[in-house]
Image (cartoon, rainbow, N blue to C red; front, side, top):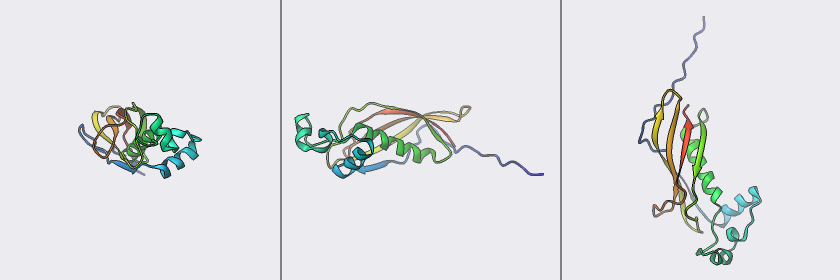
Amino acid sequence: MTSRRQTSRRQVAVGDEIAPFTRETGFANWNRYAAVNDEFVPIHMDDEAGRAAGYPTAFGMGHMQWAYLHNALRGFVGDDGAIVALSCQFRGANTKGMTVTAKGVVTTVDEAAGTATLDVWTEDQDGNKLAPGTAVVRLP
């Protein structure tokens, strides 16, 4: 007789922080992202266009911050978990030379559903939030 091994969910509690995902932003990262997404928009490639739009330099794509949040959440849930929902608001640009970090903290855990809700955000090197949001993940 073979026994079935029970898979237990990783213990997650309100207040748990996810591991941060950090990148320095700049033209090299933006160019690779633009190549994949066909997003060669002047404000993301040219400092003069960025200044004309009211920023000190060219600035990164908002969806790149979205990707950073996904990377942080994927690291949190691992291969056996899932990102069920993610939303954020782009409130600050990531300008050239800025260090952007995606972070999150667990706000609720639904053990019956096997999910956790998190406050998530990207922030610059000074702790200014750039893209605050929320996420729901299915725990492994």
